[in-house]
Image (cartoon, rainbow, N blue to C red; front, side, top):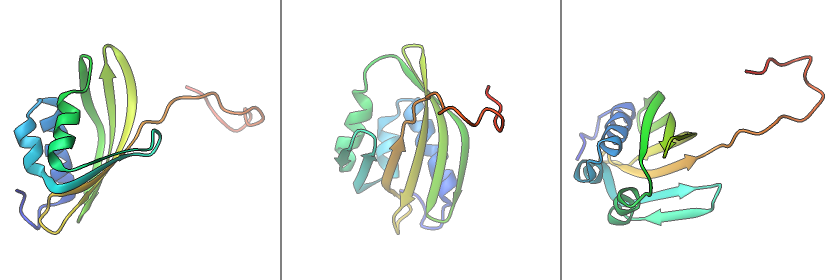
Length: 128
């Protein structure tokens, strides 16, 4: 369990460290019993610590996560990650909300996919 006054950024860092290390017990210690995990793009929701840890444990393929940017204050943190699955990289945006005990109560993951922009703004933008 985290200290009630631990900053959300520190919890977020421990969260991603545990996931990359496949430290499922360590991950579970960071989560509230009734943690909720939401994926808006697929409209999926997982409820509860055991189910969320199992979801990560069973995620298929050879995957790794690298934190590109992490920020947090009080009870809220946001991260930008690079998630590689079997050599294919994806960008992830994750928002973490802590409960009164400093445990993660809500995780919201966004997995934006690259797309071609609409025509007509070429004179304003630089592509990379």
